[in-house]
Structures are given as C-alpha cells and as structure tokens.
Image 1: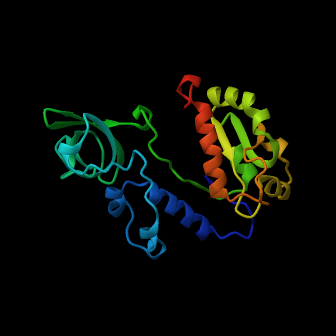
Image 2: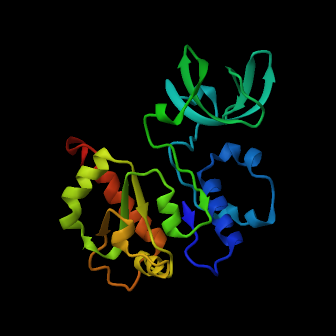
Image 3: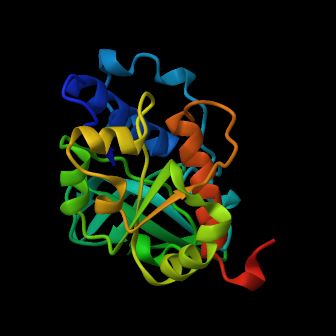
Length: 243
C-alpha cells in the first residue's frame, strides 16, 4: 500500500510506482492483455523478473505438474464455457459465469495427459502467490485508521530492539492480521507522523528496530521491506518448520 507521505509529492509518481509493482507481479503471459502500450511503461523491459510461484515457466500442457495454479484472463465464451488465457498452447475451457476481461485463478489438474480446469481462489492456493500494490492517496494516519488490521507494527530505528520484541511479535503474528508500516526513502515513520501531529506510540501497537546497528542514517525503503519481511516470514512459521 503506497500512501502520501508529504503534501508536495506528485500523484503521478505514486501512481507510476503502483503500476510498476503490479506490472512486475503480473505473470509474463498476461502482460500484453492487461497492460496496453503507454509511455509510462516504456522501460519495464529492464525490470528484473520476480520468479514467484505465480510466474510459471511451463508453456505446454505436457510440461505441467499433476496439480498447479495459474492466474488467467477470460478471453472468450462459447455456450456455458469461458476460455481463459493461462500461458499454455491455447486458452483453457472452464464452466463458469464470467465475462471477457475477468482476471481469475485457475486450478489445473492433469490426468492421463489431459487437463481439468476449475475456477479457484487465492485462499485455496497452498503457497505464496504474489502481491497486489494499492494506492491510498491519504496521509499515513488516515490510512492506518481506515484499515481493518488488528495489529499495527511500525518499523523504526527508534523502536525497541528485535531481541526484546520477539515474544510480542511471535504472539501477535500468529493470532492477528498485521499491518506493517514503513517510512519513505527520505524520512522515517517518526518524522512523517510528527508532521501529521501524531507519535509512533499513538499509531502503532508495537514499534521495532529490525535493523540494529544499521550503520547508516536511514535505511532505504526497499531494503527495509526485504529485511523486515524476511524476519516476519520466519517468525510466522511454526517452530518445527523454521530452518
């Protein structure tokens, strides 16, 4: 979720950032269908591939595993069936009440060389299936207050140490929906919130310094996201699964 951290930031820049993130998350075989040519995306070819599970490399039915999930777009209808582009030799036929252009998740089951396809949902996919970037053109406090998350976790060099926070983190991550807050490339959360008339303690349930002894004045937002989510991901697994 991209929020408005300052009054002088450009809406077009924020919108471009969200578009680029969603473009990167989109499977390669759907990009031409979902993203028409426009000047803002002229350099997307240099973006690195994510290689997340929603970016399968198999392009033939013969290469598919016994069970797989793919994102698709409805490209046609015939009778009670719709045809969904999923990056194989031809669109997959599915019994469904959908319209052209709908974006769906398809579960593919291969038996005796033939593929059976059904409409699925994100909750049924048993592994990480990418992200969705969203633009909330509002100050941070308003974004937090209008969210439906039960646990607000702030990341800041001013927070308590990760070692001290571990018991609370383990407890809350396993039992609450979590909203993690990050600062901007130029300012930390404390500075952003101070300008809005709030403090970290008033907005977040817990503020943690995930990168102790960071050695630099500020950690880049993209670096902080990777560092924090790696730790949160590890803590979210049952103890026996952590390796």
